Amino acid sequence: MFKRFFCLTGLFAISLTAHAALEVGDDAPLFEAEAALDGEVFVYSLAAALEDGPVVVYFYPSAYTQGCNIQAHEFSVNMDEFEAAGASVIGVSLDSIDRLVDFSADPEYCAGNLAVASDTLGEVAGAFDLNVRDEVAGAEDTRGVEIGHGFAERVTFVVMPDGEIAATIGGVSPTDNVRQSLEFVQALEL
Image (cartoon, rainbow, N blue to C red; front, side, top):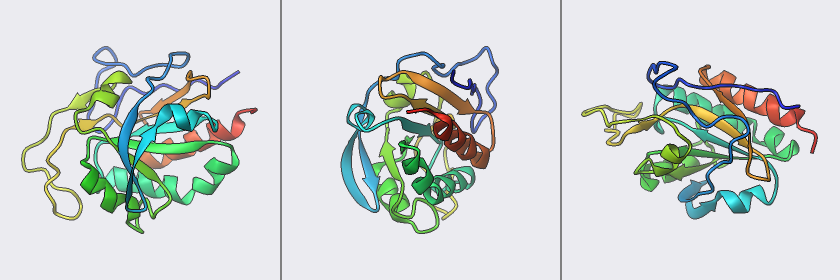
């Protein structure tokens, strides 16, 4: 039996009745998106990734922001353990592909180990029933660069090869989000 995790909060406080992410047992929306890995752009396909095993799909508010930097770093340094458990990982945000090219190669964060996908219109986040907040005028990232886009909730889904969501993780720190994701995929009996 799968452990059940719930997530209904992210960068901004959201009441439990205001919005809910897809839950355990729901079918994950299959998506394709422009993505970056180690500074190189490619088209990511969730359907294709699921052919190789479970996929950890994690949504985050923005590259180069405090919590997202921590989360990307934690996924990156634990990528070998995710792969040993038979899972792959894709990060999704409303960042432009140009921002993600830099972020994916940045040795402090994704370090060339973690793929990140661009969902500039928030359509992928919306398909997962995530709250998408409007852009905050003048908001800057940790580099002092204007962010210039909206923000999706920080929520992680573990999607099984049949497309079913096995875990929804959130409402925890970025570090705990990665730890819980890893513990979940390690506990799967594939």
